[in-house]
Structures are given as C-alpha cells and as structure tokens.
Length: 529
Image 1 (cartoon, rainbow, N blue to C red):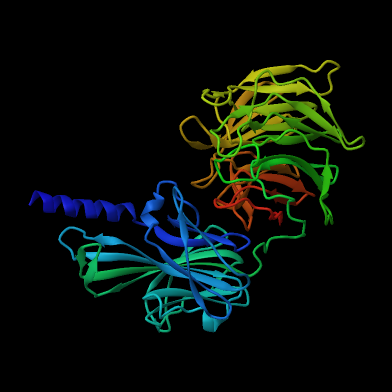
Image 2 (cartoon, rainbow, N blue to C red):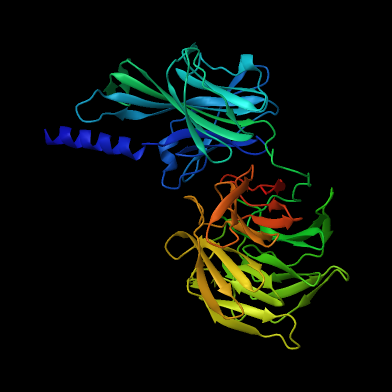
C-alpha cells in the first residue's frame, strides 16, 4: 500500500512539474539547426534537464515531400538537431514523455507532438496527419493567421488553441466546426499549442495506460521576419554576442565579442576585430585596426572618438580549462588617424560591465574582476568616472548601492541609468539612477517582464531611455521617469546584444544570442510615437 501511494505521489509530482510546459522545436535564423525545448514559451527553460527529451523522434520533410529522420544531440537543457537541405521544409515528431497518474484517476500516456515550419511550405505538404495523432497547422492570408487543429486528419471542433504572438502577448482561441480559430494579426515568430485526448490503452516503458493525452505544438515564422525594419543594413561580419557597439558621427562601430557556443570561452571563440558601417544606407562593413580578443565590454563615443574600456579575455586554448581574465585596458580610437591611443588604465580589471559618456565624463558601472583559472572573481561595488576634458585625467570612484554584472546603462544629461543585470544570487529587473552632479542615487521603475534581468540592452533616443529585453519588447521610460511604455519589439530575441540609436525615432539591435545561436542580422526598429 505504501509503495503504491508513493508511486501515485511521484506521478502527481511529475505531472505538476510539466504543467504549462510543452515541447517546441525552435529553428535557428538560417534554418540550418533547431533546438528542441520543454518550456512555457519559445525559449530554453534552464530548469529543465535535457535528458527529459532524450526519447524524441523527429523527422524533416523537404520541398519534395520526402521525410527523413533527423538525429539530435542532448544538451544540458535541450536537444539540438542539424537540419539538412534548404528552402521550405518542416520538422515534426513525437516525444512520449511517460505514463502518469493523478490520484485514483486513469493512468495516461503523456505525448507531445511538436512541429516547426521553415519557409513557405505548400499547404498540401504542411500536414503530417499520417505521422502524428494530433497537429496544428497555420493558415496565413492578408497579414492575418488562423490555426487549425486536426486529429487523424479530421478537424477538431470547440478546442482551445493557445497562441504566443510575436509581440510577446498571448491569446486563447476556440476552433469552429472546421477546426479553425479566428484570425490573429502580426508578423514574426508565432508559437501555439493544443491538446487532444484519446481513449486508447497500451503500454509504455513497462507501464500500462488507459488514455493518451496528446499535446500538439507549432512554431512558425509568418511574413517578413523583421516586419518592423525600416532600413536594411548588412549582417555583422561574424555573428557575435557580448560585443561592444556604439553609434558615432553617423557610423555604427563594433568591437570583439564571443563567436562560440554559450558559456564556452577560449582563444579561438573570442575575437578582437573592429569594424564600422554607415548607419544611413551602409551596405558594406569597413574593417578597422583591431586589438586584443575581448568580450564583456562596451564602446562609448565622445568628441568624434570611440572609447573601449575593460573586457574579459580568455587565455586558454580550445578544450583546456577556462582561464578568464578581466583587463584594465582603456583606449580610444581616432577615426581621422585610424589609430588607437592609450588612456589611464582602470584601477582593477573589469568585465561584464557597461560604459557610457555623460557630459565630458567616461562612466564605468557594474561588472566584476575575473582573475583567471581557480581564482574567485571580485564583484565591483563602485562606479568609476574619468573626466575627458581634464588636463590630467584620473579615475575617480563613486559608491555603488548594488553589485551586478551583465547589466546595461545609458546616459541622459548628467544622469546615468543602470538597468537590470545579474546579482550575486539571481538576475534583477532593478533600475538605478546616478546623478553625477550630486553623486546621489535614486530608484527607477523595474523593467517589465519575467526573464528580463540578464543582459538587456539600452540606449537613449531623443532624450528618452530605450530598453530591449530578451523577451523581445522595446520599452521607453516615461518623461516623468516613473513608468515604462512599450514602443516596439525586435523580431529576433537577443541576449547579451547591443542597442544603438538611429536618428530621432529608431534603434538598431546589434548582435547577441537568441538562446540558441548568435545573431548576425541587424534590425532597425522604428519606435512608436
């Protein structure tokens, strides 16, 4: 009796752990790879063990309609699959999660049936009814999208379809007698899920079940992926995250960054290249004199010159234990001479920080000092300033009421806005404001959203603070500085990317990682009035 009760309790706990979590296939930007995740949104959930997805069976349907099994590689929190071929394709499959039982109810098999559509797949090749017991299919016309739920190829009426839209909002829709929902508007990546239960008995992994609970999921990019784009700029020379980027005299400058796999750093995956492109009508990147390999730093601009401060430098070769060092370098680049000049070094190494210019002062905020293999990093608790107008510039410090890294900052007048970041225990949506004239700190409104603390991006446009979080939206701080308003969204969610102003009403999203791979494409987004 005790053993039976324990088994039932375990099943209930397992079922609770997966509540509101579904299996999605997330194609990369270039549709060469896909990540299989279990999550409540279209991103990796780091609370999920990738081993839970190990039984996934996936196939890829090419343009001719041929289905080919695809292999997956287990990662810590997901599965990764290479997608052969090119052009319109779709990925589909099944994950039999296990036999569950709630209380004295019937034991049931929990099964997920994810599908992802790559490109303009013809309608006649989009359905995989002979392969899975339940599926979702999109029907897009005139900028609006409807979703159809079928089971065994037949429409399912009066079913609930849960839709995640590109603007990060959600909708619950009901199907009609033809299995179709009402239309929703939007361009970009949609996600959807629905359920269909079957009174079907059987056995899985040595356990008998009397019902199958099927959950069909769908990921599809509708219309132009970057529908909010107002101008086209060339992709980054190399797709990188954790880079430096700044707008200066009509040019976009980028330096360094991480070009490898997330959380894997070595002398080959971190770069020290330096480029620029014209913001208005630029079609080609110009390579400039580079420097040391660095990531986890940013650039600043003042008086037509570009400043680079600190950063993290790995000193281990690929495959060797990590040996990461925060540097003290402070240099500036003069576009007129195309040369770098050395400035007073930081008092201590600093990386995963941010740097801005307020008035004539270079301001460095947040970050930590990594000291190499086997050494504990020190978190910084002071802001540093360097007066660029002084005859003999020296670094001065201001106490910081927090310890955070992977944060972002921007400046308006004498005020420096420090946004979110990662604390010593968790990420924080906190906003702190430093008035350089008084040296005093004040609190701003926290950033909206749930997964917004780690490495957002910020800039100032037309005298207002603009922030982009990994969830996708762009927010603008109110004129009173007491609230955030949504003014747009990027098409590609970016973490550890950068945001730079473009004119008086637009921003450019640069680099970053979408949770699966680095993003090479630049997005110009026009902000709402």
